[in-house]
Image (cartoon, rainbow, N blue to C red; front, side, top):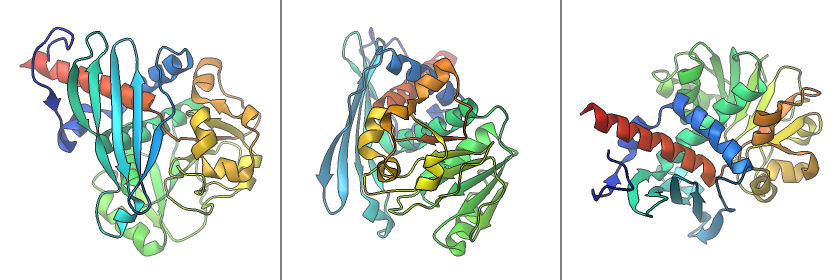
Amino acid sequence: MSNPSTTNASIIVCDQAKTADLLDFRQLVEAIDSAARELDDATILSPERMVVPLGEGGVLLSMPATAKDIGIHKLVNVHPGNVKLELPTINGTVTVCDATTGKIVCLLDGPEVTGRRTAAVTLLAIRTFRKEAPKQILLFGTGAQSRYHVQAINALYPEAKVFVRGLDLQMATEFCDRNRELHPHLEPLDAGVPDVDVVITVTTSTEPVYDELAKPGRLVIGVGAFKPEMAEIGKHTLDSSVIYADEPAGAQHEAGDLLRAGVDWAQVKSLAHALKHGVDASRPAVFKSVGTAAWDLAASRVALASLNASDLRR
């Protein structure tokens, strides 16, 4: 692809498959690492997302972000009730434009960007808060985002064993059977918590699914709860941990598990703080991921670089 600031080419429209091809997980981790630092330095601007009710229990999310090179706007609809209809929970697009001219360069599939960049944030958290690669991971959840996490884990930690817990053993078993081509080391669990290195919660639960006292060497990552009434991680875990959030300002409005536990927000550190200043090792860490358009901007950079590389190979 030519330089977007000089070309008159048509807007490139990427469907879900094309968007997936453009977003390598390893490259996403590096791009989000950079974006987190830029967000902290205010060289990426990412205001709080606008949330507007849409339909029965759904929301429309408007998420812009700008940097010196590009600007993006992610517009997505989230309808949790679609699960019962066997329809996608998330629909939407990411519009990518050149910062110099404002020209729209491409459109990316919103759910694919969201799924991949969210899983990549989890990978970055594992890399940041753990000295060694995880050997065993416990994954709560059997939805689309859990599938992205399985793909992401396989990309960076192909030998890691992943235990999966769903609403029941049947759901966990079916999820593992469907996704073993993505990661061969999946094992369904009915209950309990094995001796794992990382716990990842990817649910829309309104009650905590994990509430163990913090354990040395175990990283807990909360991904799924994105509304004040949701909660995946319990007070016992949070009170005994050092808490980080990918975007603390957003977490104060959306991280229901942290809100329910009454955490001291002055003590919640950002991902950028951990990247720049190191990790507080006084207690085990909990990392809360709520998302920001800065991560979509990071993913858009990866997509543009992939498009440019593909163009050069022709």
